[in-house]
Amino acid sequence: MSNVLILLFLAALVFQASSDSNKIGICHGRVGNNLPSPNAASLLLKSNGISKVRLFLPDPTVLPAFNSTGIELMIGVPNENLTYLASSDANLAVNWLRSNIFTFVSPDQIRYLVVGNEVLYEDPFYSRYKEY
Ligand SMILES: *[C@@H]1O[C@H](CO)[C@@H](O)[C@H](O)[C@H]1NC(C)=O
Ligand SMILES: *[C@@H]1O[C@H](CO)[C@@H](O)[C@H](O)[C@H]1NC(C)=O
Image (tube, rainbow, N blue to C red; front, top):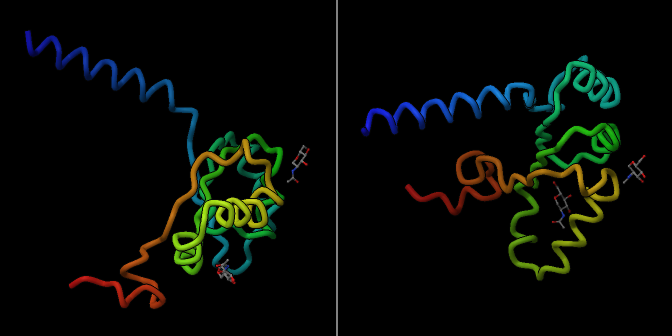
């Protein structure tokens, strides 16, 4: 009986994985030289069927290139802004979203915000909170 349940569970997982196989995501960073322009990069991703992109920062020179592409975005909140966002009231946080993200790309394209990137280990700004 339990073997049947395990098989059904695995079959459900495989089915779910195969139905998502066309939803490949890409991390799009801008650190490097000889990079394509943001417009060229978003066209390249779209023409290759990429439907999800992670941007490490809400870069105002990059976000407009993704507006109206249909690509879902996961956008990183800069570590330097975390203290401000955590200590401010909700209206200030909404204003931050408006002026840093929604000014450049339609809100319905934003799938996730990533809050912090290796905050405690990499960023000297927060290293005083390290615990070890
Ligand atoms: C957010 O961080 C940027 C640096 O990444 C800084 O220039 C800006 O002043 C910060 N804004 C707020 C509201 O914390
Ligand atoms: C994004 O594109 C849509 C459709 O072209 C447009 O209506 C909207 O104003 C754009 N949003 C921003 C923030 O530029």
